[in-house]
Length: 339
Image (cartoon, rainbow, N blue to C red; front, side, top):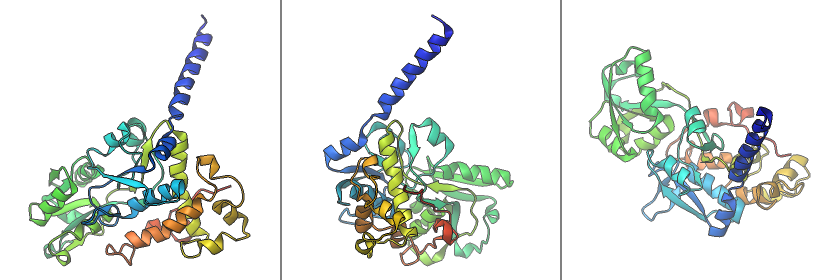
């Protein structure tokens, strides 16, 4: 057998394996089960947090509700599974959850070595530090010699080491398994500072005994693109989870929201007609009905509504849109075109 023929047969075999993996029908499983299994945090206000009755709210939660709305026309058909930072990837890899929507940073190693695909960046963030106001600190560089609380198994743990070594700063890192353990240790005075993504710091600040006594320093020491992830090998499911995110951004850009969706569905705009399903079969191409975006916006809202309700200036977190504004309003959020 020639070397050329061997290469052809090997390539054919690899293609067959890839095609088989890509045929893994997560969407069929979700439909048969009657609910989406969504992996979330163990409790992070504004992103994924349960109340005392077990009702989940947050930006990451609403993203999963949007997927359920697209599939079932019912945003309640979601089972939320709280996961620690340590266990989150194993749960997705094993099939325990269909999508991981849990303040997770998109990095190269996670994207290429864990068998994951990131569906988008639902929140552009950066790592920061929270300290007591009584310390009178204005910059992270004043934390030389400080003890710093961090959650283990996160990019935050690695970023602290990179930044402090690069700036010749001494530090003591105290790592904890869960977010609750980390914030409790900081609140009790075990460490001088608490580090995490800035969005998470604003959320964790709400859990402190005396909220007004603490502040988030303005410095950002890393890029933390946070977004949902799915397993590699199922292109249809990957496409669906990507386009739910893009659809919510496109709806906001076109002025379509949960209050005017019925009126906008009658629009003569070609772009709006494609997005809302009266022109073309874009929904069918990802395995759902062609009015999938109408379902999402009616039940959950557009991206801006989801952001403002959960983490925006009118929410307890009070976070400005910043980088998470639309591309034509000074931010970087950008939905791919439906056409």
